[in-house]
Length: 308
Image (cartoon, rainbow, N blue to C red; front, side, top):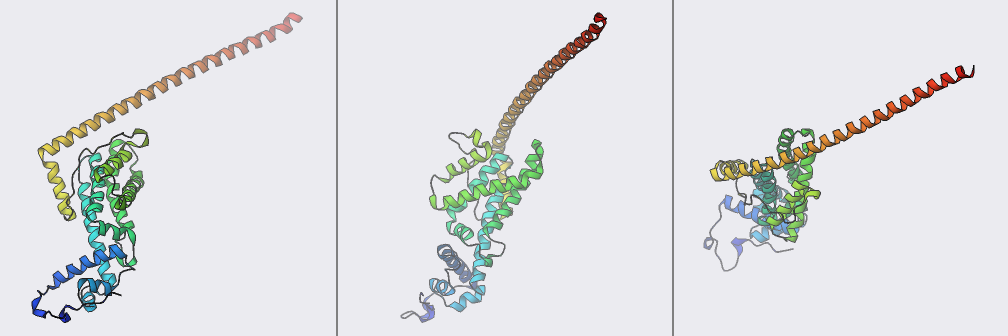
């Protein structure tokens, strides 16, 4: 066990020689120390004694601020959940469906890269002390937001919006698991990982691009609240150049979808024509068969008469 150091009893230093922290400063210090230790050791591997020793305070100071290890852990997890949710919420404020997907993937990977300790805490423990702030519940919160986005997109494109929740879980799960893998791997760079994620999610396995690239790369403000992040995204959309670019992308996507619909319609019409031809041939054959049977019946009636 690491020794606990009380600053007031350090040899050779008087209490007045060190600047005393305010209650708020001390609380923030303990949160940062706890965050680092929970990421390094996990919840069960971290003790109040170790936290106090690293922060150079006595155990009662930690208890005074958080009531115990569980209270400190809950604060750390809540902050990480809020930070990641704010970044993802800002990403989903984009107007273009593909841009939403790109920015959401980038937001998670940016969080993993810039807040590795926080992400390790979210994915490694899911301890009861975290309450609803587990990684699983966080993923469900994000999936709920994505479900709203997909529901509107599905309705607009003529798909069943009831399936939006299922597709949201698929998309978010794919991105989240990739983030967990990339936490330790860190290759390739996050923009390339995001581009490949979007490539698979947007194009599917049968339409993969050989060298995918993001159409709208960029960072998400990490420290912004959810509302501030949404406002920042709305401001970006209102920028004339950014808006013009998005509209161009939207039109490009719309034209692509129209061509695909036209191809599908032409294919369907061809199939209908082939079906009609097949039915006409079948009717012709049936009529031929019927005429043949009628002739056979007529001959069978004539033969007895001739015999008489």
